[in-house]
Length: 387
Image (cartoon, rainbow, N blue to C red; front, side, top):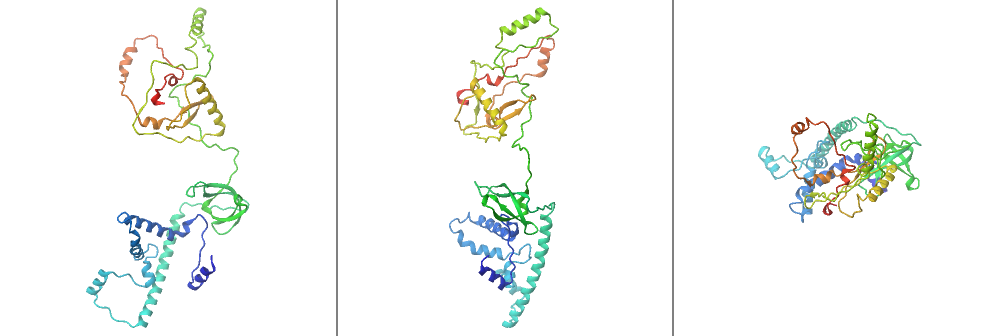
């Protein structure tokens, strides 16, 4: 605070209250007035965008003549001891009361001083009641937190990339308690400089052994269990109730059609899958954060898919995030979140078979077989326009 401002406060009998950094709640009246002025300016600036500055004086007068919610009086009345009178007010006074009796200067000054004193006392009482009510509502559900010197805390500070974006930084060490809700903290990132912060900007620092940035997505069984990856033919277990000749026939079939039982997916050249989206729409979704220990798994999965030829490098404007689904055996299932792509895609209305007709057709059957493709979605290539 400058020396001139201190002398001015002493002459006017004003008690200065200093606020802590990044905590404008103590300047509630100033912040509320700024918000009110911005809202009022925004209303009439659209009508006359070039000459809006000429209307600032009438705007300020309109603000000063309205009674304040906390004090109960307008700033104009507290300053001059009377309410502002417009043309209609003068006409109303003339019609109802007639001409006001004349007063000498001494009597006018004495009445004005008495009225200002009365208005000041009433506004101070109203302001204290409003502050108590606001404090009671603001502190509803609040918890008392205290820090001791030497304790480590996190401080909510603006980030280096954007002043409007705040994040918890630290830890920093508390040196002393300044007031009921203010603490002095040593900023190790500023060469040991100290700074006073409000309690709402501080949070206790707790040491943890391990921190997980994201949680794994729960496993979904919509696609069924996954076949273990292997390029070698796998000998399937035969039923022990089969005879030796039947078991030999099954083993011979497995060797003869080993490509069918391979866990390496094939690729058809009879059809391609085409994705039709709405024109002029581009889906660009930011990637999800991954734990550090899973990034190597992602690299291995990507390398394996590149080797098999099911994916390729792309410079497209479209982007969808990957999702790692943990399976029961501890391995991961590499998935891609295409929900936003599905939202803008156009689908053909295929006729679905009726369940009762299927039951009628299969009711007399003795054998039921199913066809399960190994990674069936990888076996149908995409059209060049859909990639």
